[in-house]
Every structure is written in structure tokens, then in C-alpha cells.
Image (cartoon, one colour):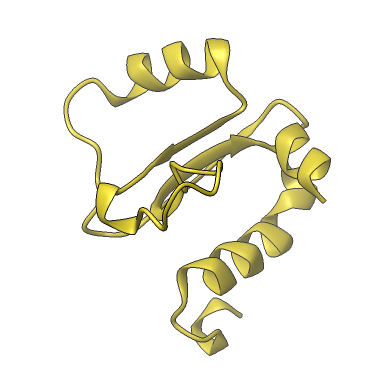
Length: 91
């Protein structure tokens, strides 16, 4: 159960995904967002547009920059969305 999981973005996201993913088709989109990270106006058209060109969408914060490691921008888990097929490819 999610309420027994430590309050850490990554752990909560992984736990929720593992509990629910068997119900997803490969092209279904999983969206994780904090209660204070609700997108504003016209959410669905923006997401459809972004997923036309991407399998992974996330916000990032400039203040998380760790130097020139070649990986910036780092996704921030306060808002992250991805297709199930993309999550499978990462593992």
C-alpha cells in the first residue's frame, strides 16, 4: 500500500507504477504529479502534442544543475509522464 512507503518522490513513483503497471497497455501514459504541481490551462492538448514527439515528459529546475555532466536537464519527479513502453526500455 502506498501509505506505507517513505515520503520520497522516487520511491512513491516506483511503488505506484509497480502496483498499477500491469493494467497499462504499452502506449498508455503514466503521469505522476505532486498536489502542488498541477499543470495549468489546456493540459490535454499540450500532453498530446508533447507525446507526439516524446515518450518521456518532465519538468526540470535550473537550481538542480550539478555542473557540466552531459545529463542536464535532470527530470524532476514533481511532474513526470511517460509511456509504459518507455519505462520498460529504461529497465
